[in-house]
View 1 (tube, rainbow, N blue to C red):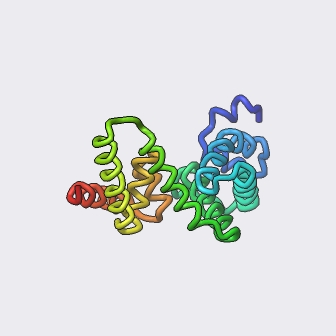
View 2 (view 1 turned 135 degrees about the vertical axis):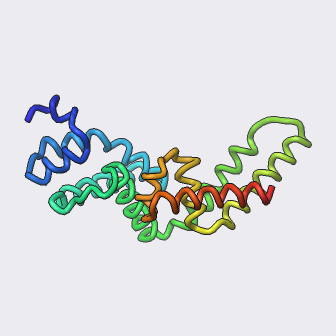
Length: 186
């Protein structure tokens, strides 16, 4: 099938063709999501080369298991979940997970602190950032992850549900409760 006509197909249609050994269909999927997969992995592992390896591994795994793919969620969500798990595995193997989470928090706080302002305003702004960060860390895991995926990564409720293995109403409730708790603590 011509590449041009394949580009018009949906992700699930391309996976159906790939399951029937259509390599061109799978190549279209790879081209469609490869850079996004690298960016997602790089946000987690903070290493461009490891992120590229993770993305390649993910697509290789998807291709090997292409006949077992069942579209219970969007292909993008499926890929992102695989990237997330492989990134976590990579961090566990290198023992860097805790260090990276701490570095990420510190770099975010530094970025917030680097903005110029009057000393008093700067102090109050830093205090507010510190308090909000502490409150976010105290949220239950599902609420914290759902809020992060929604607010920072701009994911839809359906995508978050697929990533966290929950249904959409559970995700809406988790985000609502996280927001309510953060507003209550301010």
